[in-house]
Length: 250
Image 1: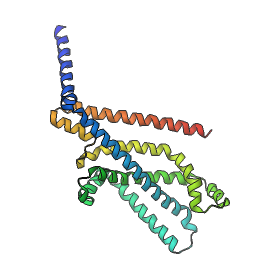
Image 2: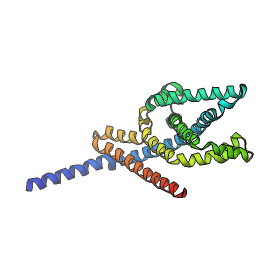
Image 3: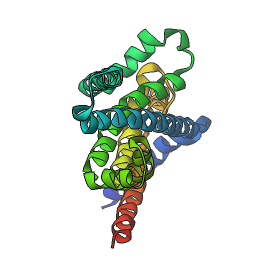
C-alpha cells in the first residue's frame, strides 16, 4: 500500500513538473496565446473573404441557372455564360484539391514576394478555399426560394437584381445561416495546417513548446483541448441560432 501511494505521489509530481516545464517556465504558455490570436485572425479574415467570393460566385451560378434558358443570344448571355464557366472551374479546382496543397501553392508559388507576410497569405488561401464551399451553400439557399418570390418582385416593379437584393437574398441567408456558421467552425480547424508555411498559429505554438521541452504529450494535448473548447463553444452558438430561427418561423 505504501509503495502504491508512493508511486501515485511520484506520478503526480512528475505531472506537475511536466506542466511547469511546458507552460510556466519561460512563459511558454504565451506561445499558445499568441498562436490562438493568429488562428482567430486568419479565421476571421478568411471567413470575410470567403463570404465575399461565395456570394459573387453563388449569384453568378444561380442567375445563370434561372435566366440563361430564357435569354436571347447576345453579349449579355455570352458574359453570363463565361462567368458561369469560370465559377464552375473555380469550384471544381478548389473543392477537388486539398486545402494544404492550396496553401503551399499560394505560399511557395504564387505569393513568393509576400513570403514574409504569412498571415496575409494564409487569409487569402483559406478565404479562396472557403469561398468555394460558401458559394454552394448560398447558391442552394437561393435556389431553394420558390420562383413565386421572383414573380412577386417583378409584380412590384423590381428588376432581377433588385428582386435578388431585397427579396431573395435575405430569405436565402436566413435559410443557410446555420450552414455558414458550421463552415466557420470547420475553417477554424482547417487553419491548423498554417504551421506548414511557418505561421505561428495555435498548432505551431504547441509544436514550438514540444521542440523546446522534448515532451509531446502535454503541449499537443493542450492544443487539442483548446480547439475542442472553441468548437464546442461555437457549436453551441449555432444550436441556439438554429433554435431561434425555427421559433421565428412559427
